[in-house]
Image (cartoon, rainbow over all chains, first blue to last red; front, side, top):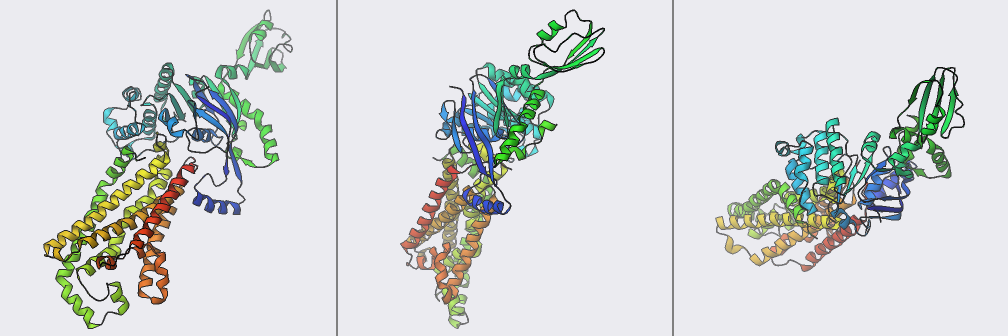
Amino acid sequence: MGVIATEGLTKHYHATGPTGRLGDALGRRRMQGRGGGTIRALQDVTLDVREGEVFGFLGPNGAGKSTLIRLLLGFLHPTAGGATVLGLDIVRESVAIRARVGYLPGGIALYDSLTGERHLDYLAELSAREPVRREALCDRLELSPRTLRRPIRDYSRGMRQKIGIVQALQHDPELAILDEPSEGLDPLMQRAFYDILDDFRRDGRTVFLSSHVLAEVERVCDRVAIVRAGRLVALEDVAGLLRRRKRRVEIELDGPAPDLSAVPGISELVVGERRVACALEGDPRPLLAALGGAPVTDVTIEPARLEDAFLELYAGEEAAEAADDAAGGDDASGLIAPLAGR
Amino acid sequence: MINGPLLRRTWRAHGARIGVVAIALGIWAFLMPVIYATFGREMEAIIESGIIPEAMLQLMGGGVFGLDASIALGTGHPFAIVLQVVYPVGFAAASIAGERHRGTLEVLLSRPLSRRSVFVTLLVAILGIAVVTTGATVVGTLVGAAAYGLVGELDLAQHAFLVLNTILLLAALTGVSLALSASFDRPTPAIGIGLAIVLVGYVLEILGQLWPDAEFLGPYSPFHYLRPFEILRGRGEVSDLAVLGAVFVVSVAYGLWRFPRRDLAAPT
């Protein structure tokens, strides 16, 4: 069984959002007046996060990333399906899960009146576990004792994020759930954070990381799941995702172009007088073999980037989304930036 | 069920403010024996002159201005009530909904801490504050009475009843306000409803006492179940304690049932 295992996990709620009963009643009435409906925040998500891996959960704002995390931590209750974290049921054993997990919320809010040090002490006390990693984390993130003695209200956004990272990992949890962890960090601190993740993984810990920064996911994650409008549209290892994506290829020639139309993985072939352009999917070796003996002066194969794979996947899912909309019911797609057209 | 670090942090974060409220209530309570000792005879003369309407006299304890009347007037005075309900209503209503609104609730709940534990810990913290502020009034009354040699006139058993009744009223208000706080995502509606209960309740009780035709409104007010004059004259009723206790139990039971079942979406 994986460290995180979800089975058909689904979360729907009313357009007013999942508020309290009194709040619900007031909000529902308001939204009914405005034609509000059901939001499908997460739809039938099944995934499995393995022990010791860094797992990326990708999607734009509003796609359902935070909803999944909040379900895993027991902040939300599933509409259907279920999940386990570290073998514990997310509904019945939520407290036991949180004893073994470190969590960094997206855009973390802290107690402004406390100093950084007091804040970390307080959260460590609440965790009832020794903050064995705190010193190393503070060193890595350049949080000096002097900085930690200042009240949090004086901290910049980046410093608050550093405190957020330290509080999530200081007690050496078995699983870290990090929602947009590098938000607000400068490039140097981002690199320090990635090193922290590498160490964490080396120590056999598991990381579940939600992000919309694709370069970050490509840099640190072993596997990724991509969510769109609350639905899982891809789940595979980063290398596989990159291998699958179409890359632009341009070939300059000093003579006639060879026939590339039968080469596996080649599409969108355009043959000019001394130039060939095409799209390549998968292994480049058949293409390179087909070019053997041709008067090639230059070959450019665009590097495979997760960002492009992500955008391709999103473009491919547009039709499915349109069909779903036609079938009735609102989903979270209305909240998503039109990534495919970016 | 009670979380030590959360309890300590709640008290520590409000220590200075609790101190200010307790001192203000202590001084206020100290003044009641002083007022009786200084103006008691003048007050009795005014009462005997008949210029105070009968309904007002009933509000002031029924026509005899003794030490008990002075203390009872002080207990039911709007100034004392405002100070007493700052934490049981204001802080209780703002506590969970405020943390939720600021986003700190999810940092708290990301620890191995059940929502019921958060609710119970805050309840205990606020009840502890209510005991401290009520205790300050007892100390103030005793010091004031001692300063003017009036301790012998105090019926300590009835004062103990008054303290218990006051704490139960504050507990009932705390239970309702905390249940409201656990039901909303923003503190404003919870505080608004909590304050409305206090203000409307106070007006209903005063109306019920001053105007015979509106007497039926009194039982709808929480303040109807704290009657300092009757208590200090040995006519306190256990049924008042039972009503306040029932409100406390029902509101806490609702909060403990509702809060863990709520969805806590990402703060907006």
